[in-house]
Image 1 (cartoon, rainbow, N blue to C red):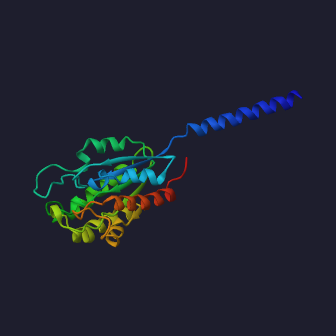
Image 2: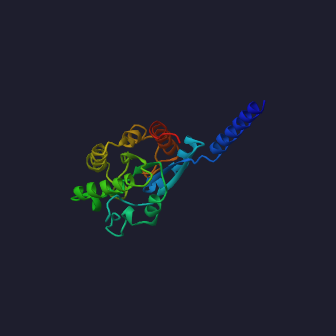
Image 3: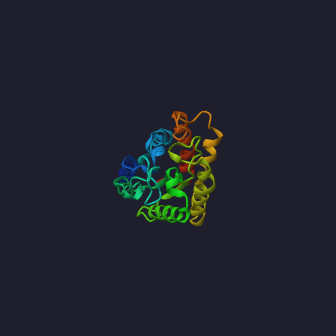
Length: 223
């Protein structure tokens, strides 16, 4: 009888311990890296799409480039993403997954023309920095989206023929997953942009969130 009672008590404590462990389980952290397309809010939609068990962090900064010495279309400013405090904080995020959606501003005339190799070097270095995080996150390379206008000298042709191929090449060299947001935006161009033809509206943000959510659930192992 005492033996049965002892076993019962042990079983109860084991169940309680398991439940306690479940209760304090840390969420999976997603770090969203990018420019104004990220800063503008899709991470909030991604959080809603992923639901409980995930924590989505927005590390987007307006106008930033993968190029370390990127500038505005006027040539002014030091707009390399790696020069921001947000970048430094993203490396401390303990992320389980990183979504890298940056390159639109690199397509500006002052940034990419004659600097294709510099872009590849700096973009690859940015990817490698996230791959080397202590948490060894899954890194998703998102191709820079289709641009419906040439505002700020952003060029859809340069995104398609220079930026995207370099992004894809860097990802393939490292065996990383590529999400083709260029085609996603192009196929839905009549409904997903604000008037500037660059930034996604609410529908566009939710479309990004749906695609990224599905890919994260596929690639990131549960804790």
